[in-house]
Length: 325
Ligand SMILES: [Zn+2]
Image 1 (cartoon, rainbow, N blue to C red):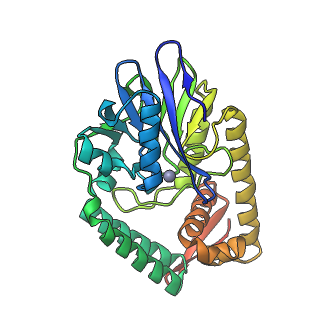
Image 2: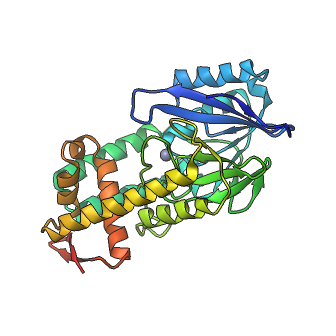
């Protein structure tokens, strides 16, 4: 990606790291407001991301010491990976949504509460032994990351805050803590994973602070519609290409969501009644390979269809059975 610089001294320096995964690239950004340099997201914890950060800094006449803060769109591991490496060299504050804090701090109570949530969820959605084994995998992953707790000041951001000249917009859906950053003067959006050019973003299922399931797809649709109200020309996305047709792309994404919900509704009408069976039917091979993503996706659509008064559910033998309303 090209450096795009504004005349007012505000510049975005993209850090782009290719990957074989279908996200194509991990993108994170240096944001220069003329007075201070911010890092927007922090890539994956990999040698490639670390080297690319350092080379982008030096190519533009900066060093790590010039970074005065890290600003996060959300806390998925491919957006926070380099934080601890940076903190060992330079203590900088982190700005993120208040909901990001328990993830960043690896809060033990929160993480075990989240594990219980998925255990119960996969059971109620009819996932059986596969669900149990995937929860065990999650427990292991949490244990392995016990020492990843981020030790620095974390300052919470919320709707309409201005950080380093960027307007904060809350965009829950892909993640409950998701934020995007808008620079109205140039109609730029630093968009994290809210909109990606070549693939649809997943609205990943998560519990709220009370342990209730968030209607992630409903929130995601609302956040996409919210972005249509802003005058945006360019989106610096968390993966893939620079987006220069955001309005058109958002409309396409909304249309695809509507088409997919119709497809899932027709599967329910045909008699497939549990989330697990729907996931197996809809996703076939992907069901085993990408279990968490696939289940999250189907559950998101079921919640959306229920929210839209198109389906109802009934608990039978501890598993939700869905049917047309
Ligand atoms: Zn993400």
